[in-house]
Length: 128
Image 1 (cartoon, rainbow, N blue to C red):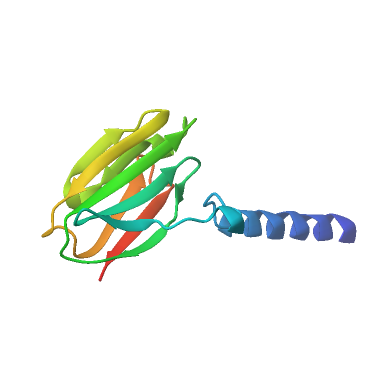
Image 2: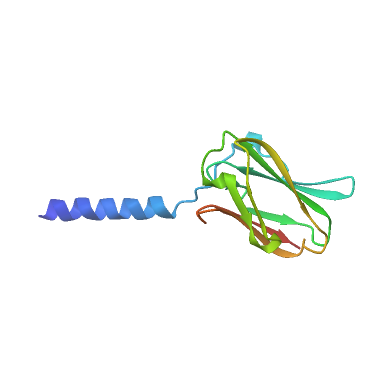
């Protein structure tokens, strides 16, 4: 009986730890790159979609024309179905490729959230 209770506690504890972990795909330190760039007067923000969104939290400059560049590479999970409620935007990303989403200077303020169709994966851009 004591052993059964101990095993049950371990299983429940392990399930709680697993459920609370960050599901964002990790990128080795040597491969980290700049996510926000300014090119020809436009801000470009790159987000990868596969098993979630990377990076999940981004800080960018407010009040600037912006392109949100969504990149996929063998993406067949729900992160390929993207919704950005603030922009009233929904799309199905291709399994592999790039989709550029324009964000006007007036829309690039405050917090912009993107999420998958199930609401399981999300990312957030904080325009400051």
